[in-house]
Image (cartoon, rainbow over all chains, first blue to last red; front, side, top):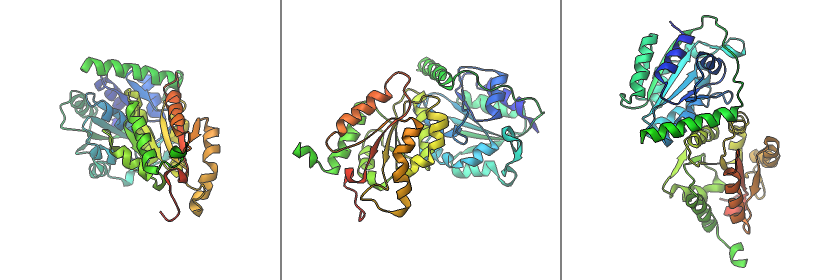
Length: 195
Length: 177
């Protein structure tokens, strides 16, 4: 099984030129500790809404390929957003779900993810291209193709992961509105350079 | 003034949609409400159309995504949807300072005496006060000024979300509707 930190590192490396929305909890903190970057949006709260932010962004800037990193708990909290992908004809959103089977940041309580077929659910709700990533290199291949716009449309990558017990890293110290401003500025530059 | 007082709901809805359109707003996102039905119809008729989402907090977060891209979205919902969206506002839109324009109906305010809407009707304004979200209640005589206030507020430096509220009578909603 894929190590959680290695999966996040693969997302960050493959998505170095793409906006990436990280879900709340240890996903944000691990991503921040691996590498902070202005193309990252750390969604510190609002659990379940990372893919909604990504959808709004992807729809507004179709020339960019947008990556969303969810956990199993946050995806299951709000799968309803997934219906917007097909409904809005969004072809540039790439959704990664890292499933560690637990609510890690609140004390490792179990989620219900073992009862869910994530790729089937994502396909039924709107993603044409869904797969289970079987290795870090598989995930890297998927996201590299996505960022280079070599996929036919939006993609969903389900990754069962384990944690090696590493500390998740610190919380974002920068004020949230400053991080938001930095992300907006990066987006405006990225969008211009592609026009 | 008389002619303005007698403005039918269709004209008010058209004025609001026109105001947003003329000031560069869009996309328009949210979940329907009977009180706001004329406004949804007018917004559907704009170049942006209307994006109906499964839940109001989805719409708010999608609007936040559109704001990062430099767009000027408007989130439109019933006050029950505001209740659904408290966390999206409290932990996303407000602390990240997303200058989101919102239009929120006031179910549970006279003449809407439906039991299931009374609680939210009573707490909508106190809730917005507690969240620190500024708002105006649209009135037939002054709604143009209130829309201008909304525009000035969300386009200000470091602005967060702001709202206009719409009572049932504004679009001539009645219990028999």
